Image (cartoon, rainbow, N blue to C red; front, side, top):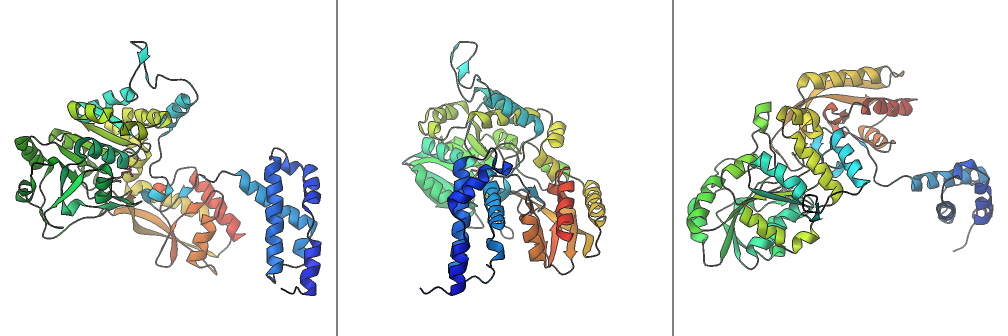
Length: 471
Ligand SMILES: *Cc1c(COP(=O)(O)O)cnc(C)c1O
C-alpha cells in the first residue's frame, strides 16, 4: 500500500513508547498504576492512532497527534483499565428483578453479614458442639424449614443447579412425567427438556400445550417411572381454553402409586403477593403444605436474596440429594451462604421483610411513593438551567422481571424526558455511557425513567448526568 505524504508525516509524529513511558514516570496521575498497565495503555493508544492514520481517517490531523494529546489518551486508557469491568449502575427501567442488571439487590444488613463472614474464619463446615466436621447446609436448613414448613432443606449455586441435582438424584435412567404445557425455556438457555437430558432423566411428556388432565398422567405411569415433575411456567402464561392438574392432585396420584412429586417453582416466594394488590403467585409454603416431596426455587428472584438454588422437602429425599456427589460440584459458596442466611432471617417477620428487602419493597411500592419520587426527580431536573429539557410525569407500568409474574403490569409514575435537538436513542446512549451508567428505557420515542427501581442516592447522580449533558 502506498502511503500519502500526509500519512507519512503523521506517522513520523507518533512518539515512541519509551518517550511516553519516561514522561509518565514524572506525572503524578500514574502514581499507583502498575507499570504493565501504563505500558499496555501506551501501546494501545499508539496502535490505535497508527491504524487510523493508515486507514486515512480524516479526523486524525497534526493537532490530535501532539504529545500532550497522546498523553491524554494514554491516561484515559489507563484509567479505564484500572476500573473494574463489573460495575454498579442505576436501574431506571422499572424492571425490578432485571436479569441483565443483576436481579435482586441484597439489603444492607445482609451485606454486613456477608462482609463479616467473608473476611474471617467461620464454622462453614464445622460443628461447634461436637468439635468436628459439620454440614455446609446447617446454617440455613433450620430457618428454611421454619419458614417453609418442610422437614429438610439444602442450597446450591442456583435454581438451575437445584433442578439438575434433584433430577439426577431421583430419576437418572428413569422416566419423569411432565405436562407439555410446562416444558418451558427460561432466559439464559435453561430449558426443561435439556436439563432433563443432562440429568440422565427420561422426559415423558403428557397432555397438550394448553390442556393436561389427570388421565394423561395416569396413562403415562409405567414400570420405569421415577418421578412426576411440575414446572412453574414463569415467563409465560397459558390463557383461554386451558386445564392443568394441581400440585395437590399430583401428590395424591404420587401417593397412590408410591412415586415422588417434584416442583420447580422458579422464582419462589414466601409471601402471598395478592395481599399487596399484586397477582397471586404460589408460595413455597403452599407447595410444602400440598405434600410435595421436593420443591426448588431461586434465591435471587422474588425472594430478593443472593443467587442461590434452594431445595426443601421430605427428609428421606433430601438425604439422598445431599449425598449425591454432584452436590459437591454445585455447592454454594460461603459468602452467598452468609447472605442467604441473613435474608432468610428477615422473613421471620413478613412486614420487616417487605420493608427491608429491596425487591419486595420495590414490588410493593405504592403509587403515592412513586409519584413523590417522580416529582422530586422532575424538580431536580427542571432546576437545571436550559430550556432544552422537556419533562412530563406519565402513568406507565413497571415489570417484576426475572421471568416472574409475566402478566403483571405494575402501575407506576414515570418521567418522560425529551431534550430538544437530541433523539431519544442518543439520550439513552448518553445516559448509558455515564459514570455510573444509567439504564432507562425508550417508550413512544421518549426517554423514560421509572422511579420504582431507583435508590435514594441515585437521584443526585441522575441530575448530575443531565447537567453535564445540557451544559
Ligand atoms: C428462573 C428459573 C429457573 C432457573 O433459576 P436460576 O436461579 O436462574 O438458575 C429454573 N426454573 C424455572 C421455572 C425458573 O423460572
